[in-house]
Image 1 (cartoon, rainbow, N blue to C red):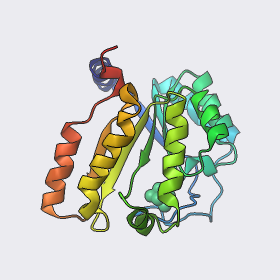
Image 2 (tube, rainbow, N blue to C red; image 1 turned 90 degrees about the vertical axis):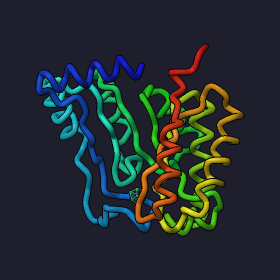
Image 3 (cartoon, rainbow, N blue to C red; image 1 turned 180 degrees about the vertical axis):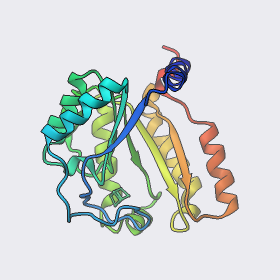
Image 4 (tube, helix red, strand yellow; image 1 turned 30 degrees about the vertical axis):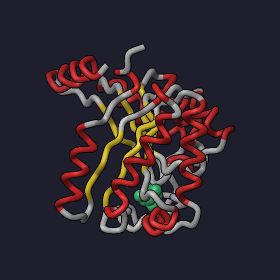
Length: 223
Ligand code: SF4
């Protein structure tokens, strides 16, 4: 899968075609992460479905194949599912970047029905306290893990990431262990683990690189 994807990306580059587009559906978000680059969480309306459909048609004409639906928190867009379905009707592969906290079983089923390429979310700490300190929302870790479980239970490919910061770097090892345990239960549904470093020490950065180097995709697992 990785090689096929690389070939597609190289072909698109050779044809000067935008292979992927990252679309910020809304600036709204129910979290307030300390490192968030988006300071506008509620003061603007997102574009409506009809506007996004025009964007999708333009991107399709340009030869784009892959869309990342993000925000803010994209599930906060009142027409998120209509927009995502419009993208799938045009045969785009979609990734969804979400904080995961709004995903209950009913929403997970609607997301699974979109057949997303991946759903990507972040773990901000091994303990609820550290997680909440990063997101500024009490109960954020439990909410994210509920969303993760609901998606995994339906076989959706979930990619976990950790923005490593001075708030959570001391829990990096514990987070790795935690993710290992959580995903062991799901065996072949284990997903990639990626890490980004933000304002953390050199030692953590090295650890993050090591984590990155052991990432695995479910699609690469033997049957
Ligand atoms: S979940 Fe994402 S959009 Fe929301 S506050 Fe955190 S970083 Fe910002």
